[in-house]
Image 1 (cartoon, rainbow over the protein chains, first blue to last red):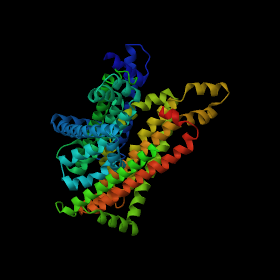
Image 2 (tube, rainbow over the protein chains, first blue to last red):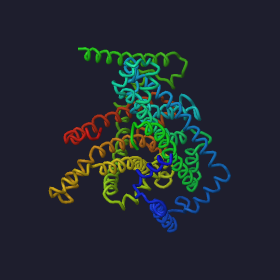
Image 3 (spheres, one colour):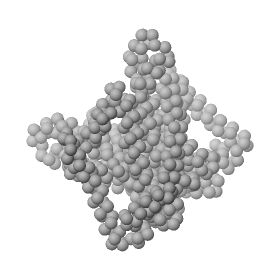
Length: 276
Length: 263
């Protein structure tokens, strides 16, 4: 595991392989641009080019952030958002992988589903939002269903391609060695298609994350980061909005770094399907 | 022969699926279980779409949306490609911008809509900036990895044959990175198209396809919503297939680069 983590870092920053002081320098180098941006922000804020309500100083944002966190409001919003994200994404993963694998395996399923999917997929997910709101009402049901529906498409397309990309020769040799349908599926097709399926899941989760924030604004859910930002606008609480956006950024980075790169390292990289 | 019959069977099956889906929808709509206003019949949708196109409102909405999306997308290209190239060519630029780009990229563009509304008001400017924000990052990232992945052998070969910096850039690096850049443009447009619809819904102005859909919800005009959905899907599809398809054919396919892109 140590190995896997260090390869990820090595790929990203290409450091020279020397431990100790270089680590600090790496951290410093990554922090430097943020410091520059923060200083620029502060300069603009202190110059009062814009009213302070609209362009708060960073310390105002930090104070609001701390207050909202201590009083438990920000964590509550964040947890609701993450739950909604995960349930919508779980829906998408189950439906997308199932239909995608079916389409990859059977010509009949492909002919039936492909026209429907290729009509629905190019429409931007948010355009469905008002329709879902009319049909399923305001609130959680619409939000989760919409997130699931929208993020199912990349999962589906990638699972479909993945199953079709499994080498014919692997299938035939497994069959020649007497594998029945179930073993063929679980030992050849699924591992073979997994890099594609994982890519699909990754794209799907990113899509779900992007849509969810907007859906929360439109669907008037009682808690959620999107709602926090949208609600704060009404009261000109720019500092609360910026605090919410910061949390959104942190969750987004965490999803990418700690969920998907880990999964990839444990499965496809270990099986030698791709090199990281 | 079998390939041919296989294909006709696929087409027949596709037609059957679509008809079946349409019939099912029509049955549901006419069954009376759901209110007419929520689930309009297909002829109603077709009629609405036709009248809206005939009296020009739909075209005007689509025009406003296109203006915003193309403006923002153009800005994203103008900023994203040079920045990506600079990041790939100069270590210092990369050191500075890469952490910023990685931190900003996971922030969904919609989360900035309320903030931009406060700063820039409702209307074109906010929408264009949101589109710009959504489209820039895929552009930067793809250009950056494209320039970095240019085969070093080509660079050295061109250098050995006496190409100066400028010729190296235009004749080797740009064509070499072009498959990635075009992929970046594709992704950027897709994001821009999603962002424009969302931004129009939230930062409502008077025109735009996203606004029509959201506005129609208030009056329970599901037929207008579905008609606009069709238009949005059609424009997105047309761009993806016609515009980017032909750009790809005119550049990377002619230069024989595509095999490299698909690797």
